[in-house]
Length: 143
Image 1 (spheres, rainbow, N blue to C red):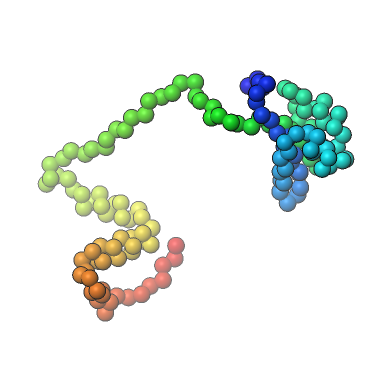
Image 2: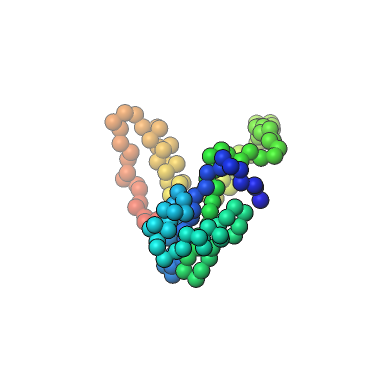
């Protein structure tokens, strides 16, 4: 656990344990929390939430102090990233790309396949030319 320094900023986090979900409120200090919720005693909460202590927790609420992160935590060792090229070197007549293409496109969802077909057809059309749709059948696709 990281030791809290004198310059670290802390906030008080109040979590309500509700059946419908958890509601969270953040206060700049304990005094503001106690002013908003007089049912909580400042001295009791201060004893619970002292530096290095555990959270105050009851059936309906959990109150704890959290350190505000003002700088990113740097990892102990910084690894140098490198980009490795992915290259497949084969002779052109041995490439067999049609089989690889078929496997790739069969793995894609139907919507993506149709978008690719529409894009390829649109590249072959000239400006203001429309696609001939006389032999196209419309089918609804279930995603």
